[in-house]
Length: 360
Ligand SMILES: Nc1ncnc2c1ncn2[C@@H]1O[C@H](COP(=O)(O)OP(=O)(O)OP(=O)(O)O)[C@@H](O)[C@H]1O
Ligand SMILES: [Mg+2]
Image (cartoon, rainbow, N blue to C red; front, side):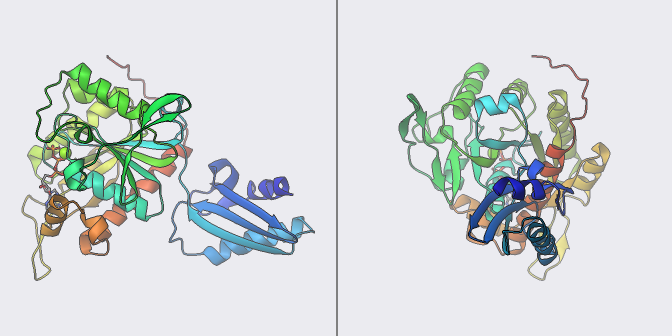
């Protein structure tokens, strides 16, 4: 009977992605009890505006086609499409998508965006992990108020580190492993081997998204890292002024060079919101939109300069954890929704030929 229900669901389209529930991998549960069935399905937007309509369509079809079933209950939860990639699956089994949060320039707010985006994705219902790929200057321990060492467990006979879980996000950072303030003087190959271990020797288990808070710049190290990580895509953080945009272009191009699609730009420090509610465009207006249009990718969102973002980031409880319903919190929510949309769309579209050779 379950097979029959699956067959029916393979003929019904998820209303936003317009692809059937079975091939999206969005059939999460089918529980049959007597003459009733409870079905749990994924959807790309949990605030979809016509749940009754789609529920009805499914129920009618199931009752029509399977005479033993009289009652159908349909539940929806966030659906994330898996990025089909052999390299990713061998290094990170169970992780559906890997995303680098990067920029060309330092100090534009990558780490701030990475932790708040991780939180926003998690609040949407996704299972999220975050790797602090900034081996030279880790930020995650301070931003999330962590002063703990990861445990080591035996998993299938192999020693694995257990990620630290804070506010429901699984985390790994070199800062968890070194003493406070000890300088990390590593050469490039050592940094990338540390990062490799963060993937292969950490028990990530099932995640919808594993984010990487990347170090600044587009030098050799960043290039090595972006080749080491089997990435679904990048998001590039920029501030609005021209000098930051030119570095963001380099960031975008670096990923394109190694065949990693840029899923979009995020403009940070877009404007200052005065206590009277007026927007002051301190660094100029529209830079993020301009660069996104230039490359034909999405501008995922524009984040204001907000004292609350800095204060909460410094105090170990970023704004998405402390004040998710604030104005900036709502902006991060919008960015998370846009990113989910981009990733699901990308994962169901046939890969575009890139034609660019990798230079290692
Ligand atoms: N929108 C914002 N409003 C206010 N402060 C912000 C905002 N974004 C970032 N900041 C602050 O700016 C500083 C730098 O941010 P962050 O550490 O996230 O940048 P980064 O790009 O990760 O830096 P690095 O290149 O050193 O890794 C932090 O003190 C952070 O709290
Ligand atoms: Mg940083």
